[in-house]
Length: 529
Image (cartoon, rainbow, N blue to C red):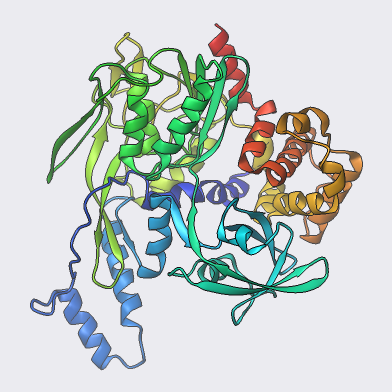
């Protein structure tokens, strides 16, 4: 694969990691008082310049935008994770951390220039008002919700709102126009995608981030699995960009005995602070496997590092992202915020997981691209560990610092999903369109699959199903007639999984996808040894 293709594809895959750079490694704390960067009592040079620009510049300018840009430029010289968050973006980012938002309780997709209801949250405001999966929203209050200018960002702004008031919707259902009034409410943003028993003794839990609700969600899953004879646990942290540090620490405490050190943080103006186990954990015995990849970052690495240092878990996958910086948030007077790096975190034996950023932010994020281009994601021998920073676990196992968590067992990336064609399929949302349209057109036949296990065992993507997908792709100018066998096999697995997602949500998606997952297979092999 050419570097050009890869450089186009990787930003899509790792956009979540870079976006969540604004929330990963975030340390919960009391709200800081609002502080003005530019006090009217003591003008900074930047304030003086903006005042002159505002009063003397030849053309009309947006001083607020200029100031925001200047602040971003200042912070970019510090580290890749210190950030200025504009007021318009802050609410959504805070919602992700909090684990909930104010909205109507639907998942939606823009298909054929229309706003389609993909899923209705159980017991949420939309369900109570009578909204159904498959409805098409054409109007929300005075806003038209159809047309080529319809965007996900605008839809979110309109539907979420900022207070618990009603929103009037006009919808199309089975070619009939209906009007519904939905009262906004608090909608959870789950950080747990799935949990279930892989076999009679091995459980699986998938976390997509660490929000303020993650520990509670995790414990509900763990205790449920324990009732089903849980003896071995596979914790899937692939693509988990982190989040609230304390939530990862609480989860680590469930696996470690005594008062073991979990992590510590330290910075120039941030005295050393240790985080230790405080209680008897719910899973201090039994095998623990953690699945990780280049998208596993920060709080994920805190959890992995602690369990690896104490020889409590086996890490399977690929080298993690490598973010070991802790941010605190300072709310500003204009409702924007500064998220500033105040400390580094270290694993129990003193490893810093933070990658070097001395060559600037672009080089820092290009590191993920370079791992692929250098073959690190394909072969274990190509992994570039910092051999100047070697440590030993409690049992004497060699461990590395300075560049993410290196797994105990390597599993190569599936290169079938990294082609330019695959990139187009994902960026155009063809898979999700397929899952939604397929289920809408085959409602009757799909009702025969009463459970996820019935679906996994009985459903097969037919040749006609494939042709339907092929035609959907063609509508987005994507030709999939010349895919390689591995690419087609990968897509067939994805097609079945997105149908499961439509039928059973993320629980169904991951149970179905995991049937052919190489890391899951490796994990079960390691458990059996």
